[in-house]
Image (cartoon, rainbow, N blue to C red; front, top):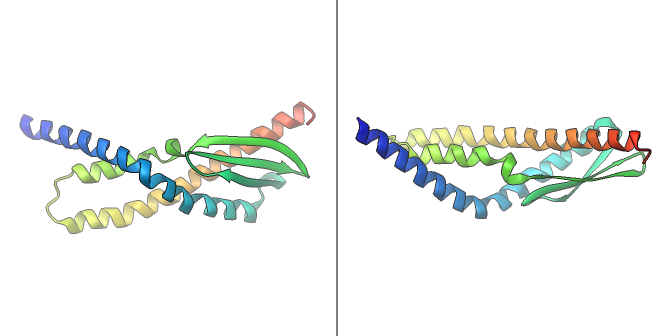
Amino acid sequence: MLRADVGLVVRLILAFALWNVLALYLLPAYSKLLVPVAQWILDALHPHDAQFSFLADYPTVEWEVTRLSSALGAEQTSFRLLTYNLVLYLSALTALRARPLKRIGVLLATGLPVLWVFHLADVLLAVESKGVASYLRCLFQSC
């Protein structure tokens, strides 16, 4: 029993290390799939009558907020921080010793789209909340 637990911990550590290295190469492409959709949603919604323009998507998501023709400033957040749970999910799937590969395939096919939608919402919330903070800071400091 103890040997199985140690084996699982070793597999988890190795899988985590592997996916962290792979993330260095995969996250830039993943950000190219995620950030344009976030831009499209923000363009359609115009939260707080503001215009959000993404300036960069990896390794930090950077955007500029404009409201009523006045720039409220640029903000940023780490893309890796927004998507860390993807590495954790893939590490757990890799470390599992599930015999039927079909089961892991089903977990990948259902889990990855759910994580993508979660990451999209996370980017939108980060951009919108920092945009509101920029607006309030500008409002009280007479930008």
